[in-house]
Amino acid sequence: INSSDIIFICVGTPTKKGSLNVDLSYVYKSCKEVLKHTKNKKILVVGAGGFIGGHLVNRLLNDGNSIVASDIKPKEFWFQDFEKAENYYSMDMKDIVNCKKVTKGVDYVFNMACNMGGMGFIENNKAECMQSVLINTNLLIACKEDNVSKYFFSSSACAYNKTKQQEVFIE
Image (cartoon, rainbow, N blue to C red; front, side, top):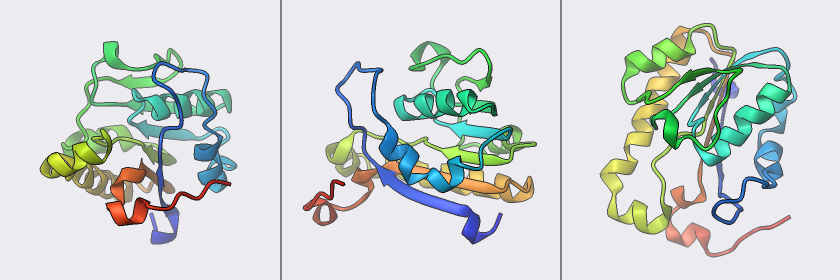
């Protein structure tokens, strides 16, 4: 994995609580270059049990890919369940052994995992939020060892400090 093969973006969740019919085109648009090459690939989605990660898994499955889906949450707390994916429930990516297990034979990694809850959560749980850095570090090490081609990391817009969030750009 080369530095040109690593993509980082920050996104927010544009939906009302409980809505499963959501337009996630902004996420797909953000990773369009990666997604256009995702036919018949083996792809790991970390954070697959979450809202955005779950929709991404669904999209990638519909595009004909083989999916490894992982999340720290137990199965009963996943937003969606995927019969056609290789699912890893309650998989903690802070443990590098788990990262190495799920990256074996994978072409691409989409890391959607993070501790989240908005700016208030981040301000009051800084140490907890730093665990996302550990997850990225472990995954990048595992990807390098397993010759993963592409790594995509998406985070909340709340990753930016408050002064960076004053103006909102909407296309």
